[in-house]
Image (tube, rainbow, N blue to C red; front, side, top):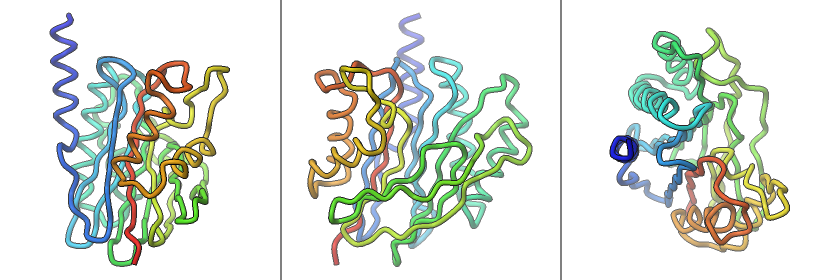
Length: 244
């Protein structure tokens, strides 16, 4: 059983990007730490074409082997459909249709999928029941993207999606993450929420996107932090726009 668990963990890790694409004018970073040997979270950073990069984080409803297998399906479908559709919303609707055809377990996935237009810094996104996109301003402000009701993928024929767009200012950072960040609790059992994410990001300063991901992990969930322990998968993708 231990060998099978280790094999599943290696397969799951091998599916995720082993290197992030280069995006002129931007710095990209990502980090995922499962709460168990295999998890239900996934992320992706994919170049779609010259000038556009896709960012995504998903969170399957369960943990363990079942969630890992469903996560693999979701990741593969998102990768395939991302290059076939113009808008993030159309991409997620296509993924949902395909999931309905193969999902017999009534599992579901929350997902935030965003497309960065490198020339302008515009981020078009679609959110399926997932925590909202966060923007960190160069001055240290925290701007959650306006969130409308949204439904997860894999259960409904026509899920309601939260669709919108924001512009990442020079020097700003966009964060796509799972609820392992916002629901991380301190020693008193109090959840930090998005405010705690902002505090950690400001304290980290103008570090690289990858260093910011690591700083969030170390402050919110890592052993030795103020957290009670890793209770949920931790996943974050960071995109910092260069100044000037």
